[in-house]
Length: 278
Image (cartoon, rainbow, N blue to C red; front, side, top):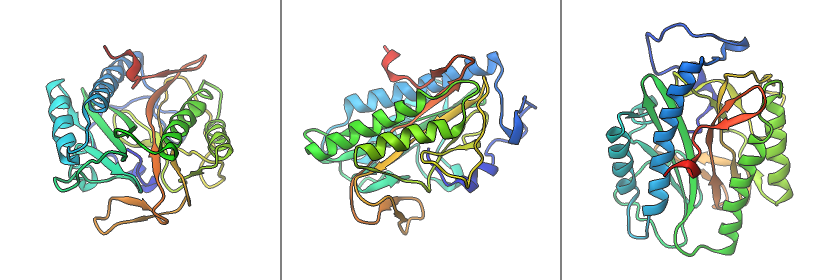
């Protein structure tokens, strides 16, 4: 879930035990905590893979939400998003010019050619996993297909920079350079984030070079939700009257991908990797 940075200081779980922190209140997970996060992340990856295989024209975004909630609960977790700062659903479902935080709705029918973003999280044994995919529904336009492809590739360009001793600007620069080289814009007002006992933790994981957020040095045991959003037109967005859904100001298409990533001494581990789900 890609949410405004000021929510990072508002944890959703209480009475959590003390855990090791790095500078700026960043949590360093123990091996046991990391193993639990692997399980939370696996649940998220499983649900997103299943949705990507099942979505078809004629479904509603409410259908996908109901499916995701049932599967998350079937696997022994609870939906991370439902009730988070009042969000009413278990997934964010954002279509075409909707950038993030689209609220599932029985009246919102998925159609051939849609660019559908599905973002979800699972809370399992006191830890969260968080991930997002963009799905081209049926036959999509060449423009939409390219945007989706570049958005996913931009995520991996950022992930490839992750290792102990690297910096957040390394991630941001790689994402920004690849995005702009392909003619797209990064949405800057939404960032990635730390994830663990709370759905949103420090640090903010930005996707473009900035001096307005701390350029944190990465340490082994950090867990980050890296999640670039790419727009085909202007990078600017506006929030609809539901106070959640962000849309492009020029009605251009938007695409997003996200993984929960563990920082290791030599690199990274993608905890929400769908390719290893059987």
